[in-house]
Image (cartoon, rainbow, N blue to C red; front, side):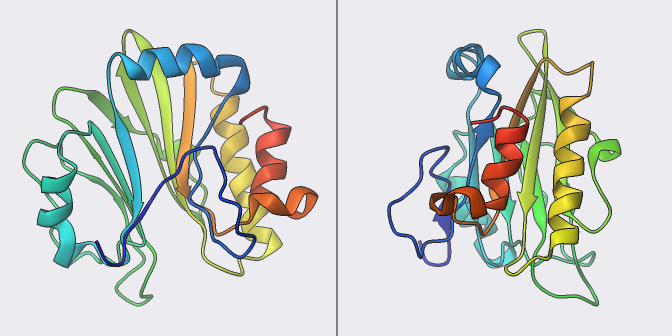
Length: 201
């Protein structure tokens, strides 16, 4: 499907020139998190580069997933993005004065969810939602970090991570999104350093 890249999860590709869509979870909780999600819900992240003309096709293709996260939606307040079998989506648009970017998250109707905008930092394209899964509170964050983001943006991203980690009401955390950062660059990878600081893998 043209213009869409799937999220490969926590494993990185070997090409140093590739951009990466990355998922992380807390190392200390990784086994229990995998067990919980494998027996209850499924989730997917895609960089769609304009959601509206592809929405019906994408939702039909991936309707078996319980949670769908899309980055680079390119939506504005004039665009409808509702989809059957999913709750009203959680959105963060750039428009109408600033094109591109954007984040949206769809959650199936049978999953309890709520927006956690107290964890979202101004100037960062992120959506945090809280899910209730098997009596556990799960924080689910979706980020879009534009190319050539400056240090101020990365500091804000780290602040958002820190707020989620320090949330005493949270039992699990999962983060996904498009960070446009090369994890293979070791110590120079900003997202790698943030995740190391907070014991994510």
